[in-house]
Figure 1: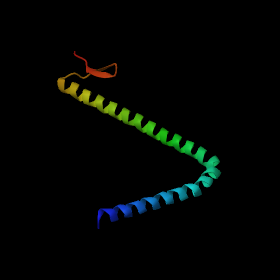
Figure 2: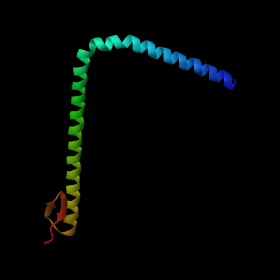
Figure 3: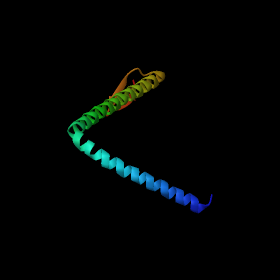
Figure 4: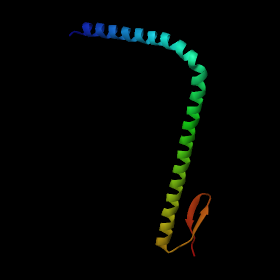
Length: 97
């Protein structure tokens, strides 16, 4: 195949794609407008649920990571012979006795 044949084929294909897209928009627009009183509250509800799940997952992950950090500091302190851990401004330090 030559470049001209390939170019013509791609031009026809893009024209068919554009035509299909326009037809889909023309058909879908009245349906979307008709169902918008249902779709808009449903979209708001779905957004709220997903936002809540993402927020709570992030908080849970942060708590787990903070606890893991705390355990690592406690084990380091125990290895040094210090059993007490002092938390100051969210940074954990070994208490020197």
